[in-house]
Image 1 (cartoon, rainbow, N blue to C red):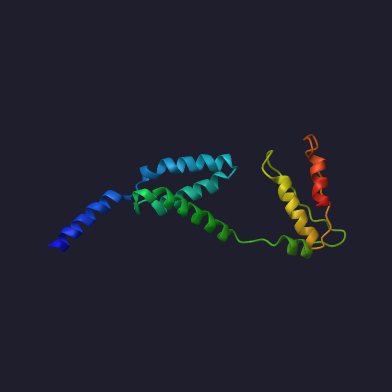
Image 2 (cartoon, helix red, strand yellow):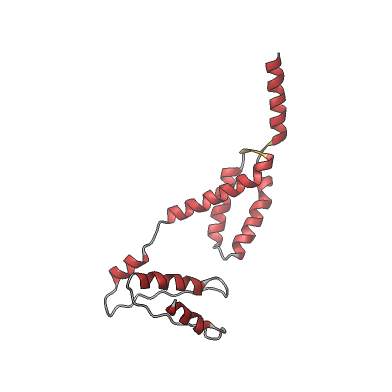
Length: 158
């Protein structure tokens, strides 16, 4: 008798604390995610892929109501991590060494809107190449921006 009562209480407690995620439960979260990703210049195709994968994974899952946000966040991180794993890796240093001779420059062009970290990324790549004894030339094309040339000089000397 006590076992039945205990099970009944446990089931009621679970029904109060658990929620089966439905499409309308996650639509607002996915819309917010889409806006954030668009503002971060993520391609529409990638956003659609992330949203559809998350929908497929989340709809119908029973989650503790207090843990829905954490569960969705972990699912998103796992989804993006899997996308990077599927994309593979690229060894820039090996590629440069295998494709270039003394008269064969290896060109890398950085394009993007202001403030997205292009110069910082160039500095990191320049440092990597210098550590691997690869000579390089860095040229500023945004010379209208205050400090553009000086920032690149800083890269060369650091």
